[in-house]
Amino acid sequence: MLRVDPDLERIAARLSSADLRVADDDDDHDLFSERTSPVFVDAYSETGLKRAFAEYGVVADLNARGLEGHQLKITREDGFRHRLEIFLDDGSRVMDLRLHLRERSVLRGKPVAVVAIDWLLMQHPRRAFSAAHPRLPGQEHPGTGMGRKVQGLLVLLCRRLGRDGLVSVPERFHLSVLYRRIGFLPAVAADTAGVDAALAAADVAGISLTQLAWAVERGFVVDGDGKPWVYTPHTLICPVSSRLQRALRPSMPGAAAMTLTIDVEGLRASLTNDPVDGVDSVR
Image 1: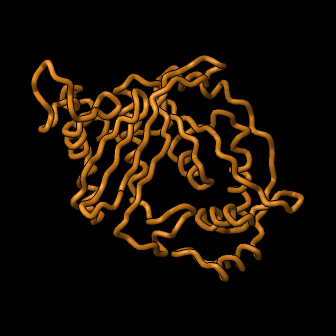
Image 2 (image 1 turned 180 degrees about the vertical axis):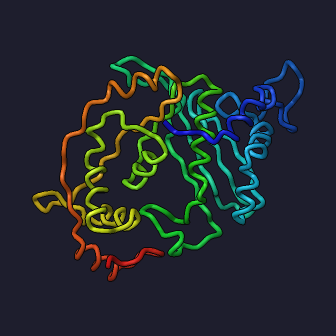
Image 3 (image 1 turned 45 degrees about the horizontal axis):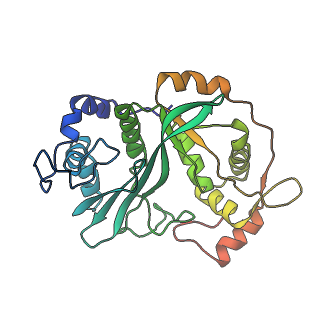
């Protein structure tokens, strides 16, 4: 399970629902009129979110990374889908978070209430790729380095909404690895057998996660027949409620064994002939 920073836990306990739903300045305060500004996941007004981000240190973290002058945008796409974006003053996007409040059958067919992360983009549009911030597949800009904190805040959001957990289906290999490192578990253990085998092969080959991500992307992770292994997106769950924590692990079947290897020579040639920003060629 993802462990939330105790400082964030204390701040969450201090913030009331009324603090987070406080009316925005541009709302019509007539009691008989509908609210004009959307409320994120039916719990956070824009004013409430700004206060929460200030209290949790998100604003300070963004400013410390050179991302001053940011603005929030809340979009309610329907009764269950909600979107939160953070833009800089020049219009470039720092965050794009799309959540889906839904029921999902994960406990032996029994539905649980979850917050599905349909999309999460965190990027630093003012930073260039470098050896310290190498490009990963699918990235247009380096990340912000705030992923663990944002995931902790999503756990706190789940608790405030009374939801059982977070669900994500990472679209790329490296995202699956990063989600699992912070405490997400596979809904079906066998689904991550290939990911585990690729990580084991990377250890043998002595390559980094970034190099491995590009090896997967370019087809240099191969099975016993020499065929490229293809990453398949799969469901990962971060249990938040005690009942989901208790029920998830016993319901998980064992993963089937799989062996993969890295075509190191092929990967080295690929990164030499078609280099990636900030990514060293394989030694």
